[in-house]
Length: 77
Image (tube, rainbow, N blue to C red; front, side, top):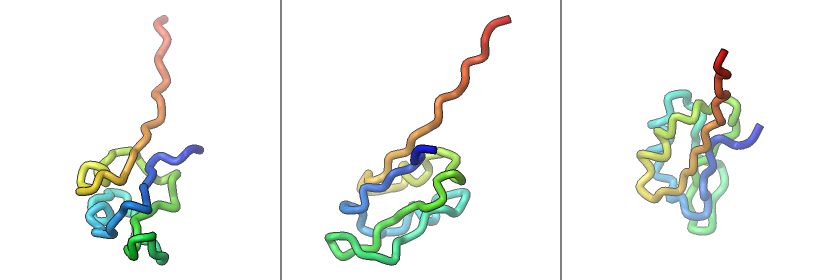
């Protein structure tokens, strides 16, 4: 499965707004520092992501990209 949510960790300032916005509690601040000295937000359980984009909408620095899986088209009978 491809990533559903991707963080540009080099730009993230670790404000944690996305952590509190995630309805399935899979976003967290990493234990490592990025090049700017911040703990970037990240996700390890991509399969639990529901692609709601709450994290991306609240991010003040637009470092989050959310991908939604394609819906299967129903064939006309």
